Length: 281
Image (cartoon, rainbow, N blue to C red; front, side, top):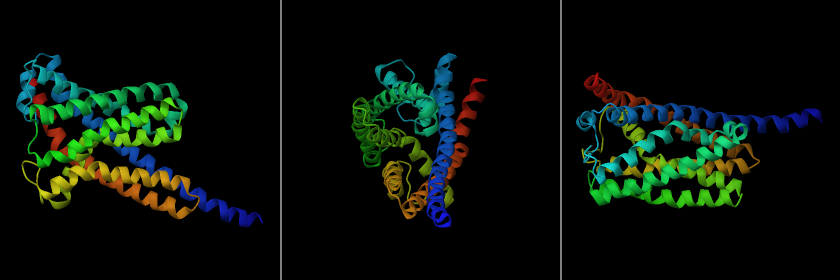
């Protein structure tokens, strides 16, 4: 009887451990990528402003239409880009079950900050893209535009479920909000990872309106959202098959994220950070 009981319990525990282990692995990789992105943003935009050399940021900024003149559009730009750095530094901790259980107050206040900054980022991003015209092409901007439109919807769902103490629903909507808020970050990872895998562009254009560009601009948040739904579905199932399926999907996502973080750091973020430091110091 004891042997039969062990055979029934151990496989389930192994599947659960594998599922949680794959999730923690992805969180650690994403954390490193988020911090690298935060260093990039702060170095490229915040540091020149603090030392009074904003014109240097003009020279190395990859963003069309960026200026440091103090105009309303410039204010909107910094209102969009600087909060992204703070969300990158602390936002990933919202996904950690350990942080949520051990530091509930931090989880609440950090979550409120993340949702508020995420909403600001979405609204300012839509304004900059279609109000100011800071976009490389119309069709190439459709993916990020849908991303920006979905952010307020899921943030509202996350906020309402928290207020109503529907914590299971809140966790689900908050995870989707996190994915959507980080959609532009994920697009950089997908794009740079695509370049590495193909040893250069393949289906890409300078205006990011090639077939690969358009596909990746939607895939960078829709695919993680599908994987998140798979994770929540697997958690409710008692069978190991569902958990192993979710484990495999999250493990693949972790590998994709790792490739993207490495590629974006080496090919995009690090070179521009070195350029700005060389020009400032």
